[in-house]
Amino acid sequence: MGTGPAVVIGGSGADAHWISLRDRREGVSPAESVAAARAQGAGPVLVEPFSAEDLPLIAERADGTVVGAAWMRDSGLVRAAARLGLPVLVQRDPSATLEEWLEVAGHCVAEGNDGVVLCESGGRTLPGGATPDLALMRAARERSGRPVLAGLGADPALAAAAIAAGADGLLLDPSSTERDVLAAREAVKIVGALTRRETPDSVIAAREAIDRVDAALAVLLERRAELAGTIQRLKPVGGFAGRDADRERRLVAEMARRAPVLGEARLAPIMNAVIEAGLHLAEERRSAPRD
Image (cartoon, rainbow, N blue to C red):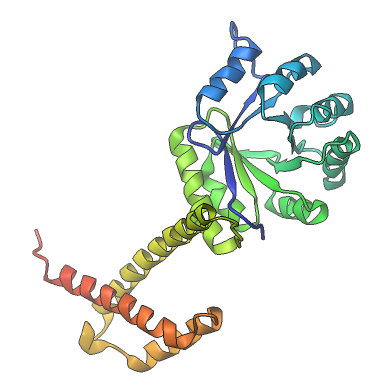
C-alpha cells in the first residue's frame, strides 16, 4: 500500500487542479484557461498541452504537465514536455500495455526529469466516469516504484476502491463538481486512514494525520453503535443487564492482537466506554416517544 496522504486532483476544492488545452473553448485563449484554473484555488495547476506550441505557456504558468492518454505515444511531444523540468503526469492510453506505459516514464527520465507520476484511467467507461484497471495500477506502482493515480472521470464512485487498491491519488475530470471532489476527499480520508501508513515530519503534518484517523474512527464508532442497537433489539435480555463479560474479554483480546502496542490493559477501558456509549444510545432510543 502507499504511504502518506493520497491526493485529489480535479475541480474546485481539490488538492490540485488540471486542465486540458485539447478541450479548447471557442474564444478562450490557452493563457485564459490556465488563469481560470489558477483562480479555482491555491493548489498546483497541471496542464495538458494541445501541441508543442503550448509548452512555453506551461513552462511559464503551470506547476506540472499532463501527458494525456491521447498523445502518450507521441514520443517527441513527451520528451519536449519532460524537458520543461516540471513534474509530469503520464496517463495510460487504453490500448497501451504496462510495458509501453512505463516506457513513456522512461522517456521522461532520459530527458533528465525524474518527477514522473503515472495515472491509470482505464479504457471502459461507466455512466459519468472512467473505469480504471486497479490491478494494472498496482502492477505499475510495484514495477516502477512511482506514485500512481486512479483516473475516475467525473464519477467518484470508485474512489474508495481505488484508495484501498493502493492509489496514491485520484484524478477527476477538470469539470468535476465540488460535490464530486468532496466525495473523493472523504474516501481518501476514511479509507486512506485504514490503508496508508503515514510518517509525518512536523507537528502540523502529524495533527493532520491524526485528524484523518479520527475521521475514520468516527465513522466506525457510529456504525458500531448502530449494530449494537440492532443486537439490543434482538437479545432476550437487552441493555446493561444483558452484557456478556466473557464476550467482551474475548473482544479486547482479539483487538489487542491487532493493536499490540496498546495491549489489553489499555484497550479494555476504551472498549468499555465504547460499549457503554452504545448501550446508553440504545436505551435513549427505546425510551424516546414515538410519533
